[in-house]
Amino acid sequence: MSGAVRFRSVDALRGLTVAAMLLVNTPGDWGHVYAPLLHADWHGCTPTDLVFPFFLFVVGVSIALGVVPRAAQGADLHTLHRAILARGLRIVGLGLLLHLAMWWAYDLPHYRPWGVLQRIGLCFLLAAPIAIHLGARAQWALVATLLLGWWALLAPDGYAEFRNLADRIDTALFAPHLYRYDAATGLGRDPEGLLTTLPALATVLLGVRMGTWLRCGQRRRLPLAALAMLAAGALWSLVMPLNKALWTSSYVLWSAGWATLALWLLHVLVDRRGWPALGRSFGVNAITAYAGSALLVCALVAAGVWGDLYQAGFAAWMTPLAGPYLPSLAFALAFVALWWGVVHWMDRRGWHLKV
Image (cartoon, rainbow, N blue to C red; front, side, top):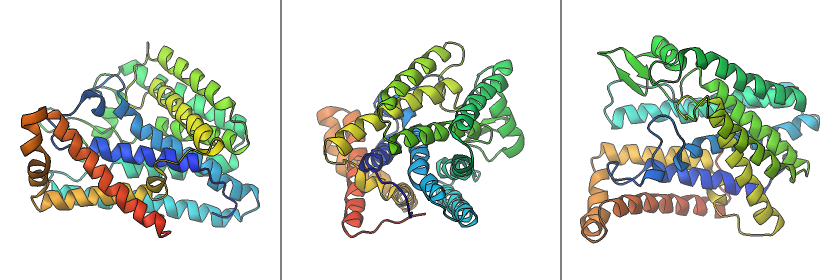
């Protein structure tokens, strides 16, 4: 974007996050995955539960570095809003197409309209105009309103799976087209459903605020903000548990605290001290890598060779030597390495595909 500010550290953080997405999404055997590489069953937060909010946080940082400077430098707002709308809708559309491929490849009983890319697109559509038109105080006030309002909405009915307000509304509006749905009981839920988009927006707006500080040279605020959010998230979790599926307010602060700490650390190491921007190739082709890798998995599953590749290349000879968990992890690492090679090749040729 014209007028955009580019930090290699942000590309690195985005890229490492995408690499982590691929790692946790493609084990060789879902029955044998090391605990840190699994989501929490319900309440709680594993390292895997931090991956998606990290990406949404970086979406906010990118808005602060790319969209806001264009508006500040006098770009035509009508044209800018059209670009925001077009990009957000393309991301949502790509997510819908990706789920169509999954529906076909895995022979799922129902098409699921909600998903990771859909949430990214919706949050971008909402957060970018907010970042353009609201000042810092108004943005902070909106974050506080979203987090406190989400607490007020969920608290009366509690946080039990299927019984909370978010799950009941998603089930009422979208069943059976959900991540999980039991026709016998009529219970369902979707971790990227309608209502949970509201606290996810708060994650993106926190990224906007941290990205603004980074752009303005106020990097010393980042570690202090990170520690404050981690402490607030931990304390809030005593009454509103950490929960990725519900995107609870405590989880927003906890995950944004870790993301801010990672952003600050990479900024110091990469931008200030000149360390290599590990993961940058993934970062400059993030959506391409995520969607392309998912489509490759769908194609291999539909062809019936996904399991054969794992068995022949990893499980057959590694399991007798090291047990079933290591080959499952090794397969995921090999898949990440494959795509790292693809995006590195693209980057060296200047191919940066934007959705």
